[in-house]
Amino acid sequence: MALDCIDCGEEIDPNRACLGYRRCLSCGETVAQQVAQERASRCVPSYNKGPLQPLSSDPRTARRQLLDAGLKTGKSLEGED
Image 1 (tube, one colour):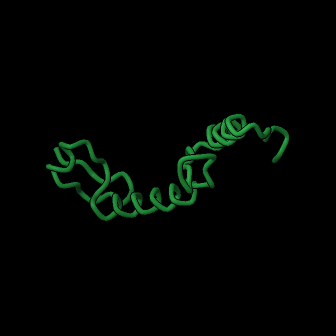
Image 2: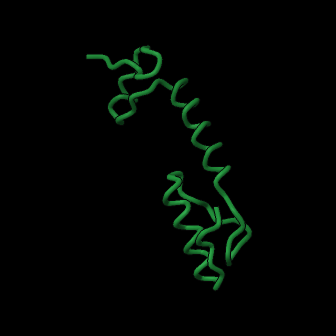
């Protein structure tokens, strides 16, 4: 039984399907590039130990991380939107 790509509908290589992939190489590459660009845009100046601090892709979690960073530096970020 052959599996089809969830994006374009083309048949997925059986070896790739056995590894659990549900996208063909072409669609998988496109999605991977989008995820990489999104993650690259989610870096802010760190509160310590380096120039950048990665944030979660979930906006609520990212906000909490920023608020926690403010608590660690002694600066309150509450109320600042």
